Length: 417
Image (cartoon, one colour):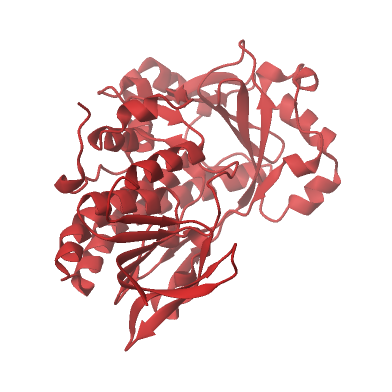
C-alpha cells in the first residue's frame, strides 16, 4: 500500500506551486500528473507580477529570467470610429521591479518548478499517472486510485490530505456535496497564431470585429490571438471558411488591415484554430474531510482579464501557508481546509462578479452586434484615462495582483543570493 502525506492531483501551475512549497516546508507530497510532459499549446502563458515576486521569494528569479519571454507592460484597446489605440492600463506605472506581465510558455514555467521541487527529499512527481477515483472511508477521502497510462497498471495511493488541482474537469466536481454553481457565458474562444512584425504595436492589444472580439498577446515574433465568438457558434462559423474569417479579422485590426495575407506562416486550415469551450462556475464548498479543491477545480474562470493562472497560484500559496504546519505535524483537520476557502473565496467570487458584469454589459452586446451597455462615450472615457495616467493604475494593479498578494510559508523561502 503506497502512502504519502499530501497527494496533489494535477501538475498545472497550482499543483506544482503547492507541491514545491509543501516539500520545502518538510511535508511529504506526491504530485500525480496524467500527461507525460507539460507540452500543450494555447494554455495560459501569463506570469503576473504577484507570481514573479513569489519566484523571487523562492530564489528562482534568475533562473526564470533566463527563460525566453516577452514582457507586456500595457493594455491597449481600440476606441472610436478610426480604431485608434488607447492605453487603458499601464502596468509599467506600478511600483517595484516587477511592473510587467511575463509571457512565458507554460511548459517552461512548470519544468522550472518541477526541477526545483525534485531537489527536495520529500517531493515526488509521477507523470503519466491518471487519477480515476477517490478512496473513501467513513465519509472521508483517504487517497486516490490511479492508472499508469504507459504500463496500464493500476494502484492506490493513501494520503492524509488530497488536494484537487486538476482543473475544471476535476473528479472532485462530481461530488454532489460540493455543490457546483454555474454561471452563463456568452462566448467561446478560438486560439491561433499570426506572425508579428516590428512595426506592430507592443503589449496586449484588444480589438472588436463583426460580432466577435479579439485579444492579441505580443509574443515577440508572433501574436497569440484569441477570438471571442458567440457561444455555440463554432460549427456555423467554421462552415463559412477560414479565409473569410481571417479577412474579417484583418479588417477589424487597423494596423494589419492590408497585410494579413502577406504574413507567413498564418493558419492554413481550421486544425490550426483551437476551440476553448468557455465556462465559468464555482464550488459552493471547496472541501470535505480529507479533500481540498483549489484553482480551476474550485472556480473555473472566464478568460476576461486573463487572471485565471494568477488566482490559481495564489490559491496554492494560501493553501501552503495554512496547511504546511498541520500536515507536517499530522494534525490537519477540516478546520484547516475550511480556512483556505475562507481566505480565497472572496477574491474568486469578486473576480467572477466583475467578469459577469463584463459579460453582460460589454461582451454579450458586442457579440450580438449591439452597442455595449456602458455609461458615457467610449472615446471621452479613453481621453480622460489618457490625460490622467494615475487612473490607469487601477486596471493595471488588478491585472497584476488581483485583490491582494498571498504570502508563502516562511519555511519555503529561499532568497536569491
